[in-house]
Amino acid sequence: MGPGLASATTSETRPPARPGTAGARPGRRRRAGTIPGVTERLPAGLRRSWPQRLVILSSLLFSIGMLAVAARLASFEDAVASIVRIEVPTGVLADVYEPDPATNADGSDDPDATGRSADDGDDRTDKPLPPRNFLLIGTDGAIGLDADDPAGQRDRTPGVALADAIMLLRLDPGLSRASLVSLPRDLYVMIHRNGVPVREEKLASALLVGGMELGAPTLVETVTNEFGVPIHNFAIIDFLGFQNIVDEIGGVSLWFPYPARDLASGLYVSESGCTLFDGRAALSYVRSRKPELFIDGTWQRVGVWNDLERNRRQQDFLVLAMERVIANGARSVIVRDDLIEAIAGATILDDRLTLRDLLDLGAAFADFDPTGLERHTLPVYDDVVGTSSVLRLHPDARKVFDVFRGITLRPDDVPLDVIDRRGPVDESVPAFQQMSYKGFPVRPLIGEAVPATTIRSSRDRFDAAVLVGQMVTPMPLFEFDDTLGDRVELILGQDFGLFLLAPRDLDQVRAVAQAALADQVAQADQADPDDDGALSGPGAAMDETALSDQRALPVFDPTSASASVSAPTTGGDPSASPVAFRATRRTLRIKATTFDGRRPDGSRCP
Image 1: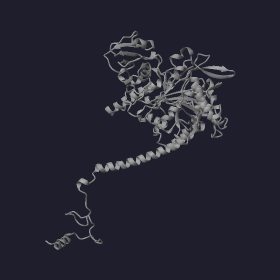
Image 2 (image 1 turned 90 degrees about the horizontal axis):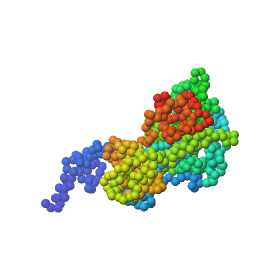
Image 3 (image 1 turned 120 degrees about the horizontal axis):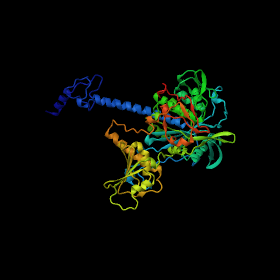
Image 4 (image 1 turned 180 degrees about the vertical axis):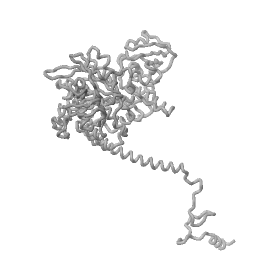
């Protein structure tokens, strides 16, 4: 076949071009067996299956969701950036201790110190967040309140205010533990400013020393110097800010056994049962010093009319407000822009609390139950300075402040098994005896030799394990086993050095123990996905034997205070929150009806 015939044959067999075209496109020949004018379907192996389509759809939805989250985070960041900040002089606020988990207490790299290799990196997400103390300050600033508001009948000069409510809040993310104590405003203390004692005054007046910008750091300095508690951050809110936040969350419902009133604060409840309080009514409740209940046709006083009872009601209200916010679906801080903006507009913070700090704390306490808040009572007694009635600290207050220093136990509170597994040793004083000299109730045991010194305890005895770890060098390993009960085991391995005369720094040991606990919980989660590994702080469960009669309001008896002062109480159940006590010249017990905003069964109003 010649070249010309071959060319003609090829032309005849080629399919005709589509109408309106100049011929088939180069390189786009149709496969044999297809029908002209009909769209070609992909081979079965190249078609998208339903699972593939679902993956694509899921990816699109995820991308949209990430964009929405990014927008909310940007909104949250803008709101935080708008918060008024107070510049704090150097040395006033304590530094948050954030150790390198690959570094031993003495500063050397030692993988045995934490159970991790020094090459694991410095990923922030792998570090347990350190405990942090907040000083919460509620001022009596009345700027912006309505003219007929009872709380507004005071000096409205900008920057001039007293501390109307002062609370210490300790957040321990590693243990999901939160502790709270109110500092009575009438405590008579030495005011400190710029490291110098200024004069003795009531604690509330510290804000007046230099106005708001200098007053808040002055109050921080005073609390740190007088009570020995480090303050890492502070937050300030005035009357108007409090009202705005309560209004933004839709109010808070409180339960009253009888109609109630306080002529001075403006509190008035016409009927018993649940009443929804807006911001203005809520302010009259938390400010009430002389509440009365309408019982048997007459108005009768409640309690002994002191600031300590008011402090308790403020704490009750705080817990109920947190429950209200959670019940309304605002568990996450980035859910509601309006709530974020209301809080940002009502709050003043120090200049060291960052957006990252807020997000980390929010994530760590995302599942926290407000009823698990440990609430401590500060023992005080009455005194008179000149013509002014003041309060002074009782010596037992040290036990309460220890909680906020990170000291929750003493050696005699920790039953200890000292298990000697070093092998043959020659020592003049047995190891168990040395720990006994330090005050621990010791049971000596012996076992086969092991290389590493280890402390074992249940998670509920975390603080006890840390206390033992402060006494041992080198830094021991930590293991947590909830089957151990109340006892703590100190296993002396072949690496054991000696017992320290002075305890090791508390924050260093806590960081090592928290890292071990976090690793253990993560491993447990991987082994059993159905187990969330959640930690429950000591305040999460209520001891039924601690229930007390709330109709009896004890006036503090100095001879019997030490037995009850150190026990924290939890919100949620009114019977688990005893009325604050104070020493007086009387030793009577006053019988009166009390109220904490909850129903008799401990539940909150809707």
